Image (tube, rainbow, N blue to C red):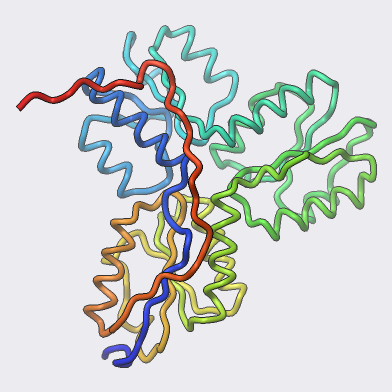
Length: 318
């Protein structure tokens, strides 16, 4: 069973790694080069199995509890950020720390600290249990409330007259706006942010799926199921009426998903490397796809600087 002979693969643009993920991975790789293995990383550096397995093979050890890190070791905080309590514990234990927190997540942390210092209570919009959410909520011991849905907003009981909101950076843009609208309806005095907390890469990848979806019959989303922004791409494509499947790698592709489809769309989450997309394309070609076309889209040029101490890696001698 093959897809029809004139089938075409459309590639969403942009897709794949964002600047924050690029930076986080480079931090681990440079730390390994400068300080040698093992390097300890609190939580998966980014939510992608291929990336984590590759770094593990190079000497990175992924942990959740700082008690599992030996005294004097080098520790890296993941791109999702950590609470103030975790930072304090790492300092008390004397680790050499490199912070791979995405600068856009860090911006939310700064906003929380600023608003709490001004006696604002803060509603965070995000997924309960996600490490980014735990890190952001952990910027203040009090005055924080978590909501995920419009129904959660209805259950809030906040009586203070100084109220604001922040959000997880990897949410569905449309779903987040629904929650913001509900917050504004229930709390007319709530103060928003000058800029949306949802990161540029999440926004761009969701917009790319919205552009691609009407042109295809099935969408393949490349990325791990632990990745919030990748899951949102799958949900969005499904909501737009496409048959949608999410895969960690080409090995998970099933022939029946694409049988007799004229156009197949492919995208990937912000933590999925392009090599995985190329593998998926190769598999689609082996199943009968005859052409591949990259769609028009935004060109991303944003980069983030590395932490001090990781700027220069010694040259390897042959």
